[in-house]
Amino acid sequence: MKTSSFYPFIYICLLCLCFSNCRKDEDNGIPIIAVDIYIYTSDPAFINLNAVGGWVYINGGARGILVYRKSTSEFMAYDRNCTYRSNNVCATVFVDASNIIAEDTCCNSKFSMVDGSVIQTPATFPLKSYSTTFDGSALHIYN
Image 1: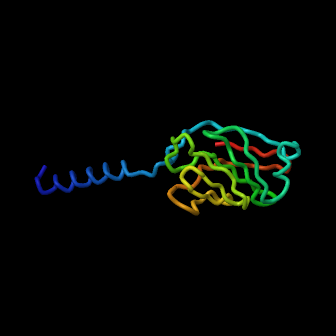
Image 2: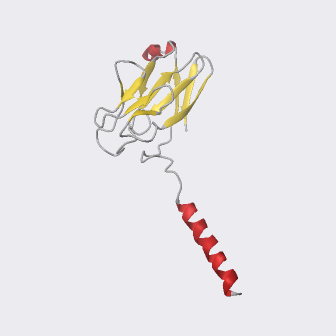
Image 3: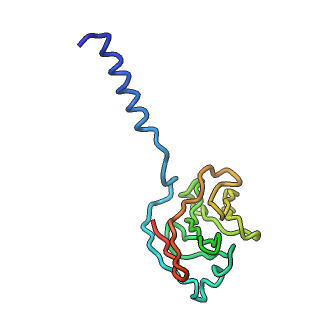
């Protein structure tokens, strides 16, 4: 092998190695916990979910799950674990008085309940979301 063709080969290998280690942190420090929950909107415990814009807290995920009704047929489900310093004891989001913003009162990060995006730092990652399907009466929340 010629020396002149050896250096580009080494350069390409190093470049591939660098890019393979530069991946986005998928879980943002939030533990990956299996979620497979069914809730029924006819259950009195979930009456708030009968109206668009309604929300409830349920058990599951890392610190609980926030379920938000986005439209008549679409629900959003987010882990309540704040994505900023997620292993801090108080890194839990609560719905504020506006009923459309989830806030971590420990770090003051705020998130949109419509899509989980950050609307006030220091958090830079959106809330961890779970998949949902709704058949008209049963809401399935899963990952």
